[in-house]
Structure formats: C-alpha cells, structure tokens
Length: 224
Image (cartoon, rainbow, N blue to C red; front, side, top):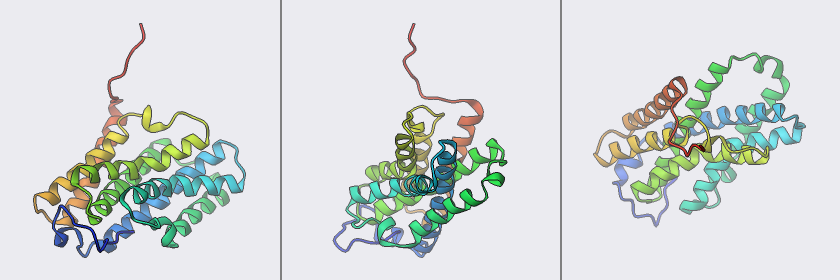
C-alpha cells in the first residue's frame, strides 16, 4: 500500500510521487499479489504440500517481498499486515488454485511465463514507487523495487528447499531492477508519474520475456 511518511524528505518532489495514481499503484499491487499467490499455490501443489502449506506458500510468494521492502524503508507495520486486502487477495488466489487445480494445471507453460513476467513488472514499479514515497534515495528505491519483485519468490523457493529462481533464471532480478530504474529515472526527469509507471512495467515485462525467448543469462563461471 502506498502511503506517505510524515517525516520523510523525498529526493523527488512530492507532487510527482503523491499523484492520483495512489489508487493505480494499489491496484497494481493487488493484481501482482494475486498473480504471485497463484504461482506460490501452484508450486505448493507440485511440492505435494497440504492445504495449510499451500496457503503459507501463497502468502509468502505474494507478500514476502513487500514485507521485506517495508521493513527496510521504515513502513511499519508493513502494508501486507496493515491492510487486510493484501492477505485476503493472496488467500483467495490460493483457494482458487486449490479448488480448481485441474483447470489451473492445464494452463500452458508459456502463459505462466507471461503471467509471472507481468507480476514481476507490477511489483517492481509499485515497490520503487513506495520507496520514493518514503523519501528513499532514487538509487536505493530501484533496489527496493527489485526486492519487492523477487523477494517472495526467493522465500518460496527456500521454503521448498531449492535454489532460488532469482539466482539461476534468465534475467529475472535484472528485469525487475531495469523496470524500476526506468520509472525512477522518468520521475527524476519530471515526466508524468502515470506514464512512467506504465513505462517501467513494460520495460521489465519486455526484458523478462525476451530473456526467456532468447535464453539470456548473466555471465557465470564455467568449470573446465
């Protein structure tokens, strides 16, 4: 949830950040929450967890990144705890997957990749925007956008005892950082916040999909 801290001294003018798209960012946040909660529930079923485990994974995947961000920027209690709509959306998504898993499991993998990229994009821009709203330096706000995008998936993978996707997937965290950077750069230049919100999300979304299509990866050490 986007909310201004009374003591914050923003590095970007308040009138650029506190725009009428507080509602837009809330909507973006909730859509991203639903998308990532569905992913968490699907991973729980693949990991043969019970209903409680499924709900825990839905909540963690959807909201852990935002909770970590809020703790780092001083937004306490975190929005996911303060606003009932966030856990409600996460649990609704988990229940949907649990009840209609036979239908969800038939969804093509390519579509799931697109949905994941969309969720990543939404969280990246929403996370960076909230950090700016709390007076965080633009450079660190970009990092907060990245943490918001990949934090939940990282916690999910740790709960399932596997190497986090962010550490091995095709340009995943980099896409989140790029999308957040586009938005923050545009705001710093005085461009319309609503426009930059969409521009940042599109940049992240496009980079992620192209990376999957072209199998782009960051450099790594190759053992002889």
